[in-house]
Image (cartoon, rainbow, N blue to C red; front, side):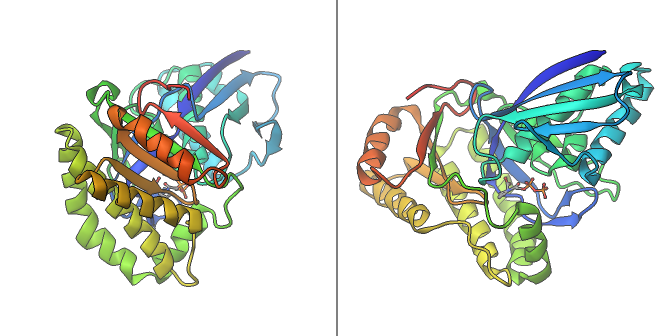
Length: 335
Ligand code: 2P0
């Protein structure tokens, strides 16, 4: 018997992934960019055990047994075993039992599948002695998972090849590059979301003309601008691009037929508050971004946290389920 436990954190996209060009290989329509959080908070912890006694693969999520025959899970295990055979790993010949736990709400639009698949693939790779890039395998579990296998600022390249071998994640800058960066996560609602990202983006690809426009005309240039803003630590531009991209992603959801609504009234009130605050300050001090749920992720620099945090607690004393204060890479700072 052999076992390994791996932890992978959530990542928060600032250029959003929304739409696939290949459903089976999980190949995206556009590049995306994210920041991977600290490993201490909002992460998935996955233990993988390989044993001669196991007749089949099994999978538990947060203590509940899940379908271990999902095509995505099967694809990931198959891919990693193929790589493992090349390094003649004995463990790779065995079936595995996988036990994964999230320390934050699952499927509430807080990138739980990203952290879960990244931890699983990292665990299998470690167990089987597989080296080199594993982002392309994590991608087949859940697209955004490929970004969580790396720390710091990460770009997922859409790639050009039909087999998806160039659709991988690479580092833009390490976690230490922008040590003043902080993230506040305002948990507006921690319930499971109504539309999964997978089905939502499929519907957008089918019905939204705006998505096509976004993918072809907006994201390529915006991605280059975002890389430059991160590399030069230009918060003003970073914040503007982040908010614009979040708004465009949610506009695409609204342009989908039937429309998809992830944000709610509290989410919109948070956007208004951020803009009002930035306006008073005369520059962008805070940037919001929302994923496939109503919860707000707010990027800001350390010096601006105390004032904005106090403001949030005064304006929304009872509307939020919780507030997570995460030092965006590499350490969590407790509230
Ligand atoms: C992102 N999201 O870039 C965007 C923004 C949600 C909104 O990546 O079908 O759970 O498993 O590839 O990875 C969510 O997409 O979807 C996502 P699948 P995934 O973070």
